[in-house]
Image 1 (tube, rainbow, N blue to C red):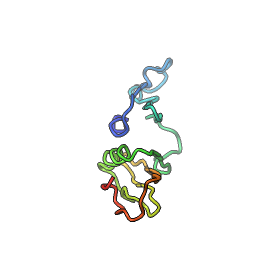
Image 2: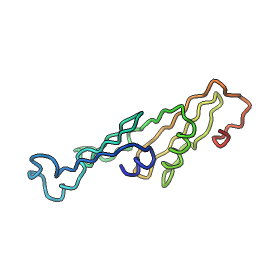
Image 3: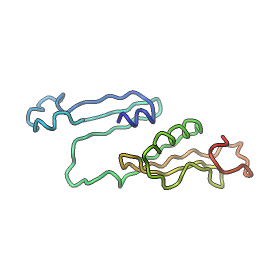
Image 4: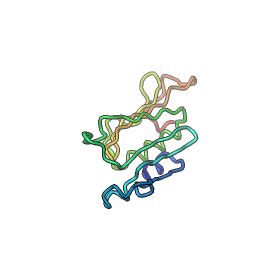
Length: 132
């Protein structure tokens, strides 16, 4: 979650399993696992946990969608998430002006970044993000 706090900003609150009343019933090696992590920002909350769930092998069947109309924020998020990531579609403008990217970050989470076209979009602009 520290990586996502770096990428997204916000305030991070971590609750360890050992902080839970009755945690003595769990094996000692589980005590430092995160029961709940909450990353709060003015526009979102992202939550996660280290506690294993039976029959779940990985989280790569889910995709997190980041929707923003702030192009500068979108570029900064993409740059940070892309570190160590597998990029399926780099940050780029499609032909109707929306800016999108898809990647799998270094923790194997899938992301779709989406920034809708602005009303002042001109179709003959070069379709790369660096021109914003």
